[in-house]
Image (tube, rainbow, N blue to C red; front, side, top):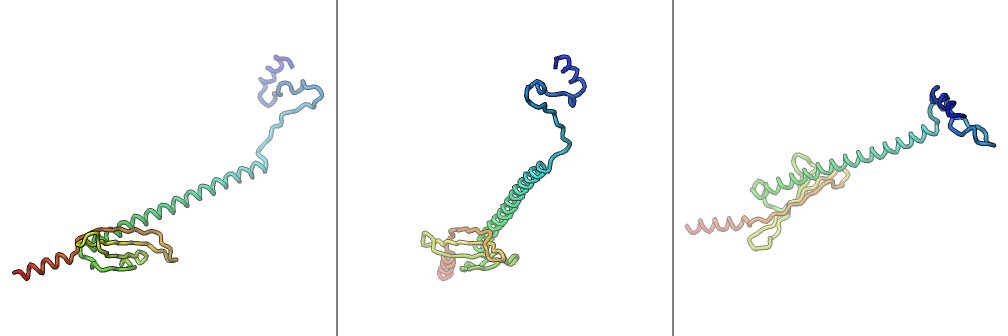
Length: 167
């Protein structure tokens, strides 16, 4: 085909253009450009499989994010409950007695324990408060432990009694 004929063929639009050199190959059948309308069933199934795989991955990411968020909230609440209970014990609101597995009055799924041991010096006590959140099936979601050294309150009581007797 000559250059002028090709130019004239391209002016009619892209449908009527033959690829260059298709008719020039000796001994081969001429190939015609096939224009398809729509997509095949195989292409639909492949795209559906890709979409479902992406959807499953996104669902897994959302589930992981939700679980991490709930765990973070429970851990934060455990820290706050532990600090509050230790402050209650130190201030005298809660008796300074060893407690094991006591539940909180506002939520029975939260429990706390208080351990009192001798500190590194004779006049110090070591208070350890542990708070944990337990599910209905018995697994622990969140727990936190806080330790504080305080002066033995009995020393103050003994000093006050000695001061009274001296008067």
